[in-house]
Image 1 (cartoon, rainbow, N blue to C red):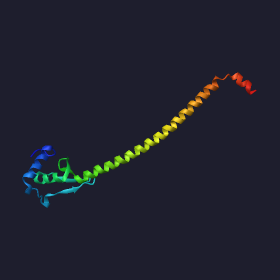
Image 2 (cartoon, one colour; image 1 turned 120 degrees about the horizontal axis):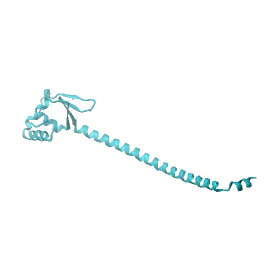
Image 3 (cartoon, helix red, strand yellow; image 1 turned 60 degrees about the vertical axis):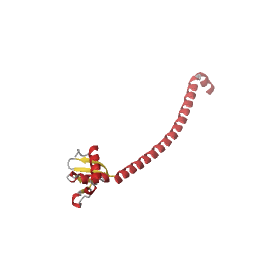
Image 4 (spheres, rainbow, N blue to C red; image 1 turned 60 degrees about the horizontal axis):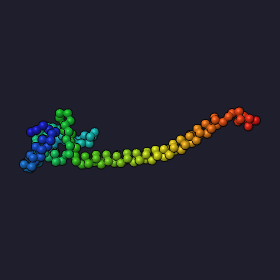
Amino acid sequence: MPRFGSFRTAQYLFESRLRNPHLFQPKPRDLHIKESRMHRNKIISLKVLNKPAFAGILLGVFSTATVVGSHYLLLTTVEQRYEDIRRRLTELERHKQKVEEHWETMEIMGGVLENCVEICNEWKSQREERKSLDWTTLNNSVK
């Protein structure tokens, strides 16, 4: 049997399943499944997976398989994968809304900033006009 985790393994197990459907009935004692709280996935002992028939059944049920250490296989069901994708899409939608709100705020701030720049330029021009006045004439007009 090819090395576990490769495409050839999947192909081998799939073909075995097609050739020998009667072998793909696992006995209850062969199934050693632990729940992983961290990943919400099934962890199955690799000792059980020595049987290609049993592993073939797993290929039909699980969408991804990752070897964890040397003793366990981390399996993700199709339903869990679908839930993960749906949750990620929801997160992306929320992020998109936040970005749109932030963009609207930035547009408003941009308008305020443009007004501030106009006011500053106006003050600057008035200040330069005042500087250019002859102070002696200004002093004489005040007296």
